[in-house]
Length: 349
Image 1 (spheres, rainbow, N blue to C red):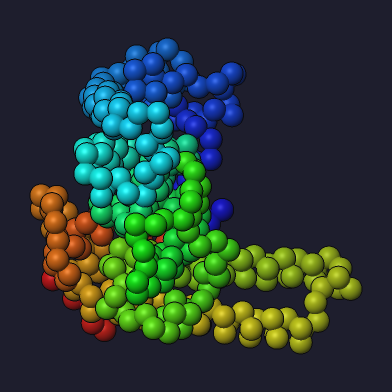
Image 2: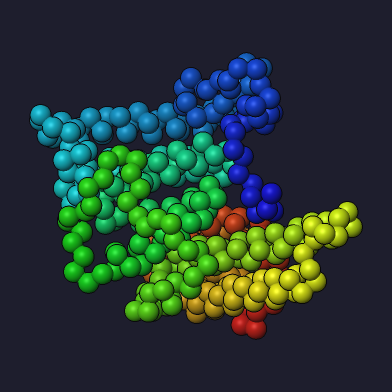
């Protein structure tokens, strides 16, 4: 496993953290919030003191959401407004309360997912976010910025790149008709697919200027590149070890020395190209917002501020929001913080 990968594929007990694969039968859901899972009644009882506040919060949001969903549905007799008006919910006006409440639910579920790192939790967060962007095609709530990091948390790096590229290409096309979104059913992926994460987005999109890239997207792209470098170095080290083992056991099965040198040179060049992109993206981030990189290394001062309700380009509020969505992605990549501190333009203040 790569060091940055902390995603837990199987549900785990919220109290003792034992995975469902080691439990006879299935983990039991909390009958109130339907989010928390436990391996036994004892674990559920022992965890209730800590869980009850979150449980009450989630239950309250879900109850409010159910009522608002019914109110929205009642506006259109004889049809499903979640299909007939999908894409234009924000423009309609009256469903905005529903959209805002559902975003709050996604945010709270995201907080739980950050603690437990269970795949099913992140997938539930993503499901809410994608549905909200299907209903509000122009994403007036700015959900897209957090979605990029949710995709990274799910190790869906290719989808993350395609998602960002869609917002930087299709969404920025002059004359794009936001009132006429592509047909999509609940759960559909409406963004670019099968993208090459090794490409330089600025070379792939010649018309794109660095100033046009939103800070959270630039941060997510940088994390993607750092992951690629980490993956390439890790896989190359394993390959060298395997070749050395193979040579020791059976000379005929080992690659020739010349072949290995060619492979190593090609690999070194590929790593260098990606490292250069990391350097480029870090500089863009710094030029865009000088508060962000110092806060990645030492987040205490910035994140001790109250959560901002809005932000402008280059502000500490913008950096706060980006770092909040980013979470620990930088810290989990070996050497990432040291790299930031070694930059000529980096200043801890």
